[in-house]
Length: 439
Image (tube, rainbow, N blue to C red; front, top):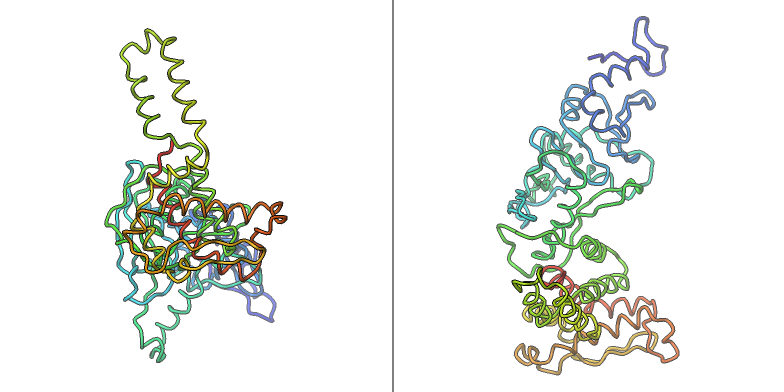
């Protein structure tokens, strides 16, 4: 490998390679990396040579100072633009770049199996790979603004640098910090569509079982953004050793993930309610479903199709013409756990016991009386919660109702008042996705 470079401030030495030759040499050394990462470029900036746009992200570069170490790492990797992650070609493992965290963090040694439509993936948090730490050592920021947070490499680089010092600072010595990644294995090859689908399902279920679990943001390709990990709320359910699920509706997953990450209190609530509304549209009540199954299972259905088709249409008609409000009540009642709803309410008892008045004139009557118990709540929660959610949605989106003085104006005060109800809407929406009767 060519290492000799011209001295800054002086002309090139006699016999030294030209910049074009150096770039060609680096390209040859990085043949495997460039094959799997065609968006990346080798270029000279100032007196140094860099790998530019490694994730198709202009805010990140790798400096080629110690070429052998960096080249060896890069040739083993795919750097997918839609993710803050690296894909290991040898082990077929996706490594989401997380952060430097304390060993006492609940995520530090978390490991579980994730089964999506019968396909098994092993998921675990663990110490960042040597390849990732190598990337962090060579990472440099550019002046370009981006929403990728530099692929979370800055904190890793700072940690690596601190470990190379002879003595750690007092703050570093006070806690035991480790660079941690989230690993997912079980892929047969690098397939962005599969990884995106798995990432969406994983993010949803990790947040469902642990509100403090880091979630995965997937940015659109054209934004040249990526996934990053952030923190959320309160853990409610013991995190399982294995998660098994069928493929969820892609539209509902996108709504849930967007709602979980948006900073807009209004949009958060609207997205969660849209999940409930969408699921109710396709909801088939138990009686209609049984009637349809009985007709379809008739031994003579093929021989006498003309006799059975009117019965099928009649059964479907009954389900379709059910009022939207009652369909929402049915799907919520079918899917939701009373215990989880009560836990969400119990965290904000003082809020739900009094009338809430929003800027814009909209009011919400107390959801529960003083000294309400869980048993009392179980007898009165539905349809009261469903009706209240629907009224809030209407007050948020139907500006024409201002003449009735019952809208929710876009103010900071209203954003605060919406939060407890957003928590309820989220609790219901998540369970509707998982347990709802969708066709």
